[in-house]
Length: 353
Image 1 (cartoon, rainbow, N blue to C red):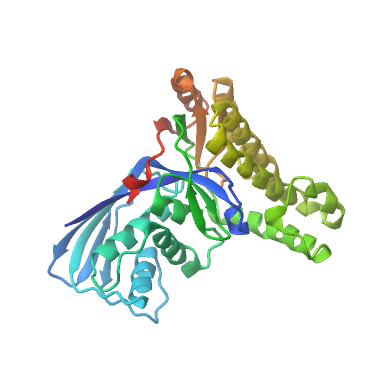
Image 2: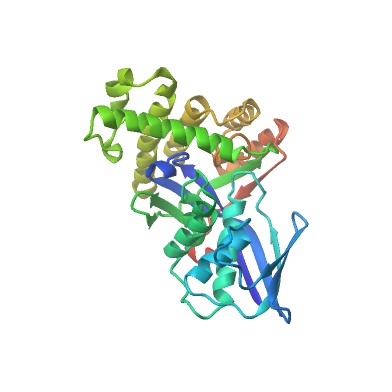
């Protein structure tokens, strides 16, 4: 039998930055997706997804020339292309504590779990390190289907812990785990991943490309918020907000990295989180009014900071709280329409291996 679990993830800083090659700060949490596989005689994979009541039967030799229709096919095809062979069939059950389409990366957790299972079910290629596994998952989930997302989700889930990820170099750096309290609220409003991602990515990239035409030596990774006004007149008005977002969110992420390393003060990080959320809501415009009301309620209830998680349009929220206000913040989320709210912890690296 093969049995494994894979965590969900929260992006704390750097939302809508990974597809620009800018850094993010994300961490895995103690909400898991589980996979259990038992050998069977038929030479195929029989999958049961308990949460969605879906089932699949997958031939062990998926045609390499055929375009995959789902993550199970793309993952199998990807490893076959790397030389993996499969001869043993399995009955596979997958279930999860991670809410679907809510911003906690349920799909990336599924892809990482699937790749880990496939790697354990074959003996032809060695098991990669966690960073490489994250990159493989990114190719299987995003590149195989020409999706607009970045690599934050797959890298974070494959490695675990609290990470500063330089998405340009694709290098990850563990951050110290602060002794903080985090509350997650599930809004009950389905997020709009592709719609929000497509617009935010396209408009930020257009703004950067326009500036680069005017100033060929412009380097986004060396930029500061002061560059906003310097190039503003050269940009069409509809790109102003997204130009502001990419510069200021980058600066906030760098400040948050410094705070995690040298001054893990919840008031400092909560203030940075709130500044990040303000940009997401007013510039990227990824936070519906109902979620804005929940965030404001959390602040009134005593949260240091609160923000939307993931691409936006709906989904989950996270709040940084102190022990004394944890329950009050949970109750505030629920009173303002959240489907459920609960405390989470950031898992250390070894729990996601």
